[in-house]
Length: 102
Image (cartoon, rainbow, N blue to C red; front, side):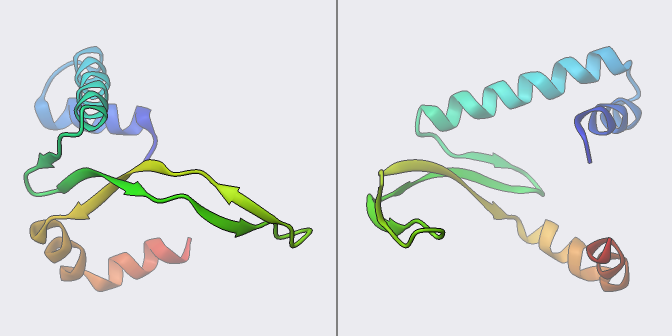
């Protein structure tokens, strides 16, 4: 789903104008980003939990040359799906299979 589709669906579900829904979607992205940068976890009920994980520095390989390269340590976002989301996805396996094939 692209951003425009998300905004349209949020506007329809909230029975509001698309411009209001666009503001909400953008603000949600900004709030989540700010919270993760600050090191906080973000829980969205029924959807899941976003958190930050640290990855240690390591050595990797350039696939085309085989040369060893250093990969710097970094922080990365991590998402854990809520039980309600997992249950919803597994309730209709035929629909999920159809989407996966596209």
